[in-house]
Length: 379
Ligand code: SOE
Image 1: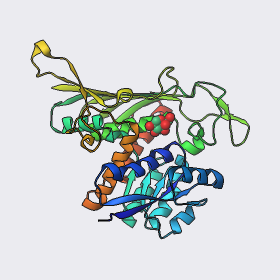
Image 2: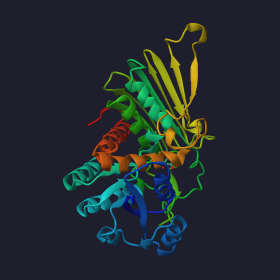
Image 3: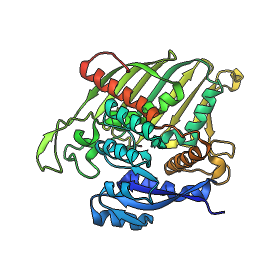
Image 4: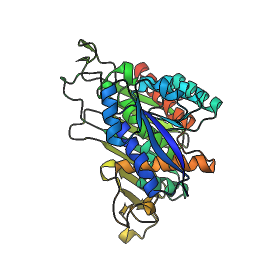
């Protein structure tokens, strides 16, 4: 029987535009879903570039103004893959137009803007989700299952890092395609909103709410040429950020993120230490979850390296045969599958805007704490 289409209109064609498009194309081949994504339209200001993107990925049409995309009756779902400063405007209008909305992370430039987005989608009652994809790496989903089963017992410590090294060169400009992440007007913040946002989303999901934070940030390269103005301008994003926190469950958190860790390209790691067991995960080895269970007989007690590729591991039964790996891009496929499942079961996939707003509030507290050089409550 023909499945109902889910007509996608994507705004933006950068790295995330590609990751999401790939997910829409793969999902119906691997997951049995009630609706099939259809790549209806790609939208961006540069007509030639968006046409080239649409041709590569198989979008049926293009637009150069997202407002026209919202006017189209043949679009069900708007996928926002723009720089962060455009998320809110597009999302507010998309909600008013009654479209479902998938939005890249972080949800917004700051908490107040995020709250407006939450209120807009809740008022319009449109399905919504934010692309915090790492929750859907099977090893991370297994971590959540182990925690939910009580295998770790009381949690004492949550530790996470997200380390990169791509902005060390002082010659790198800020602003413009690709480098908007260095421009505070487009990004809102640096590693805090870009990388720690992932760590915080995973942490809130695995370990519950954060009460307060004590953070420090640094901007190592103070001025860079701005691609859009051609002038050397102040760099106002954070190049590095580290923070301590108290979780509501009594555990202590320690987080670090930087784009200046020479040798690390995307080293996202977390480790959780509980009374009964510990787990750790590393994005560079993403199918593995390390697990230490104190109740193992002492002679053979140690860190187990679970290869999360078996049919009874999260999502893995949908892919190849046991033992064969999937990749980074698959986490996006899983997110689309869960989103569509949520539409049919009525149990919305998470993180929706309200859930992702919690991360936004922690991000605000981190930046406030670093600025004020003091502990800051999460609102
Ligand atoms: C930055 O380099 C970046 O691409 C982030 O924007 C992504 O969210 C992260 O998953 C990988 O690194």
